[in-house]
Image (cartoon, rainbow, N blue to C red):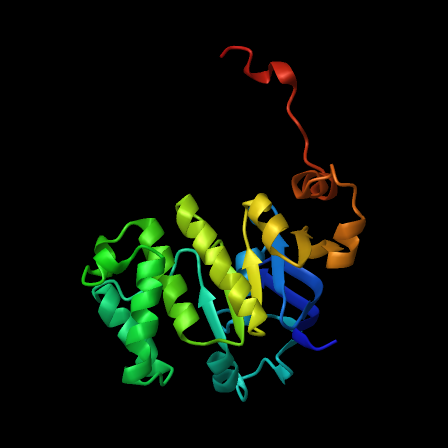
Length: 253
């Protein structure tokens, strides 16, 4: 089995506070992989490390067979695209100019880019904002624009940190359609999200991150063996040991 991401013994702390500790993870190529966990579990930190925005203290990280290092940084960045939370955009560009900039960076020819850009903007309901400055866009439109830029870069690996936050229901459905098509094309997609229903329905494999480590890994075969009436939400609450408040805690309502 070819791996898109392989992590062994990763350590990351902020000061004296460990965020990832003796962390191991393997993500198969050509799959949609879901990473879930409580707030503060370290999901965004992990994405930041994998895309080269954050350093780590110890461990070994391999992306598409290349060790994550200064020597391989440029080649890895050519293969990877990211949608962060919040998205990183050039605030005073228009949507049109920003996407053209992305195409320039990734060497997408002027003849090929227009059709791709126009179809993406139209499909995700952004055409009317094509000449609007990014700092005037809503949170949902900004997230969708960042998603368009990531798709346009033709990545081999796509990291999505809370990609569906602030997105309307119709656009979520269309983003899921795009992601499934990317998967068919061999792209590996790693998603962090608090919307467990989407993760459950969209992802092949799912890992639960808690207390600085992966505490559960549900591959596609394991998930098929689960009882039909067992939801990902119930599995998540079991593993992270969620404490439920007493029924009368809001009796004053």
